[in-house]
Image (cartoon, rainbow, N blue to C red; front, top):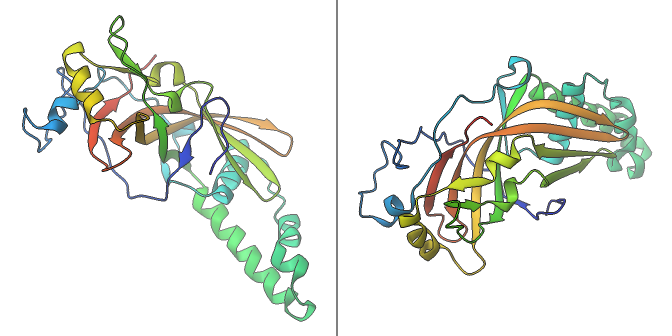
Length: 244
């Protein structure tokens, strides 16, 4: 389970890519197979579309539900800091506690693994991330829900190679708000299980990196996401986050 500040989220197992089509002005998603009277269509709603936040420096490579090691190496690549690969090789448990007769071969293997991971994150500017979080009660005054997992205070933590790298949402104040017409709120509430748990499959564009001792922070903007029931995986909405 990942560690988070203020809001608790859990990274799910890796999933395939899915791109969210742009929502229409009524909140329904063009091309959705559901009919207007089906549960999926009733609960589907979206904020207005807008220009997406561009990834940092035009980087267009993607990572899907990355592991801790990949995020650490991505941080080093983004920050332009030379990764201490030789030290990480020596710190590897297989080297530290392995038999002396096999250490030379193990060093080659561990270094090859690190080099391969480092190569895989070069040019990455987009992260597709699955999260478990909760949906607030509907606020009829503002006509919206709040998604706690996308709040500015929510931080996803990755720990590997003696480093700690955090991921936070630069546009969380906007991304956490899901605007929904009042007449649809009851259908959405009826679709939720006890605890109001939901799953988010989000597309994040990296905007900046903030170095720190023994790690740092990657800041990314939420561009769009799919919102689903935690149980049953039923689609609740496809949302394109407006530029704030």
